[in-house]
Length: 448
Ligand code: GLY
Ligand code: MN
Ligand code: MN
Image (tube, rainbow, N blue to C red):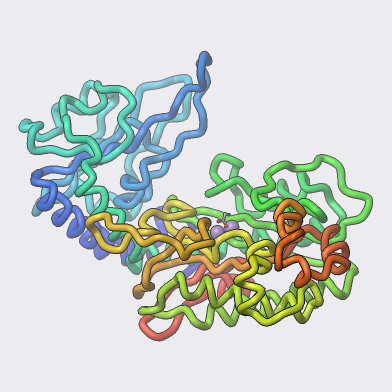
């Protein structure tokens, strides 16, 4: 696989027909269960800010992106009828205010019956006449965009499609490898900027330049956190001036290719050997968890296993004392590691279906006391998920332990040492195999 991110990449083209066949098959099943004959997948449209005439960045319907690598084609539709090639109603407005989509081009074109239109009014002529037999999948914020179809996002069909998206096709896996490669190039540039003592704002610019993304093209807002800022889980400020002393750096940043994301976190120390050793321990612990990923594993058990391993890290680092079960039960590990071990990854960074027990929409709760775990499924081959343990000095949570049985298990002096460094998170993107795993992130770093 070359690092060609375009939709002319022949390696992606070679896998695309098989992907479309899989997407079509899941729509066949969804339509049958929903008692409908045609799925109309709407790409979406940009939203206008309140009382304004400016658009917010366009976010395409993920169901549309699942069909085609068309992330910037608003007011367009895919019409799918089982047994027929999908029709793509490709909207190319006559608009001299904006850059409009070019003529359809790329490996994906051969899988569609493409009808180019220039206004939304022209769409109706390409839709099935019997609207009663259609369902729409997409965000319809103006009735006119549904063309008289009343069944919009029926739950039965949506559940089937969401559950199925948990398993990636070879085409999606190839794209996600590229998204990982793109992301690690940014991580490397950002680490250099950190070593240069640059401000968060400039580190972020170095990242965006290296991945060639505007802010709006990033799969999620970058977390570029120096020093204490690493303890704010979703820190998305960008200080314009560098701190006097850049002691530590946590970066959680991804990239996208054809609408599929990578989601990568690394943490670096500058000068403090104790922090450097703790980061190294977290890498080793994270790799131990990654090594447990395989089909048939219950992800909730991996999350709990991580808490027990983290307890050992806390004891080794003299942040806590006690046996792993006590540190887990008294809430010590949760105060240091208050988020989930990870989530499904795909078109959405927190991809859909993480709680689904089956395609009918039954859900699996996270373990009690762990409300932020976003993946509770038993792992299956070709799922892609993140493994992202963390360890932070979050005073708001640690202070809650005062006056409880946990208090005596925390070494508050070492917490004082950790506080100026914020925290540590190590996040990889991992594909599940039958009895093994593929680490997209570490493979991509190795290719750098
Ligand atoms: N970047 C968001 C997350 O790691 O889940
Ligand atoms: Mn993540
Ligand atoms: Mn992340």
